[in-house]
Image 1 (tube, rainbow, N blue to C red):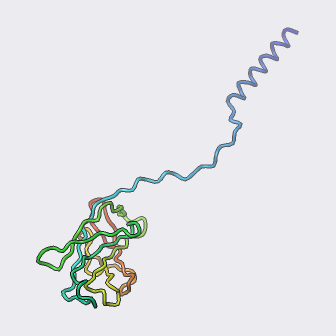
Image 2 (image 1 turned 45 degrees about the horizontal axis):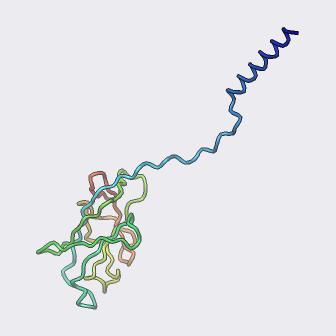
Image 3 (image 1 turned 90 degrees about the vertical axis):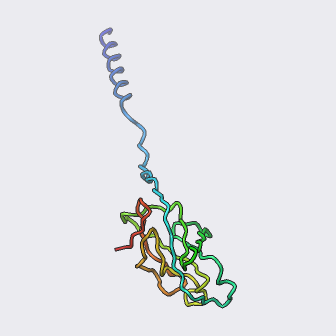
Length: 163
């Protein structure tokens, strides 16, 4: 009887050891992987304004030019400053997400120029716009109030046209 008791104890210990190694709870569903931190840079913006003012309200011909980028929040704008002695407006866009090399859509950028408000675009344009030193050559909805230039930005703040 003593021998059967020992066998029972050993069997019970073996069963307990095996159960301790078993995971009886189901594993949770794997969640999405963590997003990689977004790299951001500062980018120089330059816009060359046409010489004539085509605004129906002449007082607005001295108003600022405003820059917009698709990464910016609603109602966020960057006022550009006139470079003395020229028709160039310039500024710096801060916190621009790096999207080069291209893995996603390019940034959409444009300005509002009060000098051309009476044109078909309502003053919105991406023509004559440089972003990070790159003259933009690719446009979305050109000649409309939704006109935007398409551009990628690298880690050095240099603009790059889509292929």
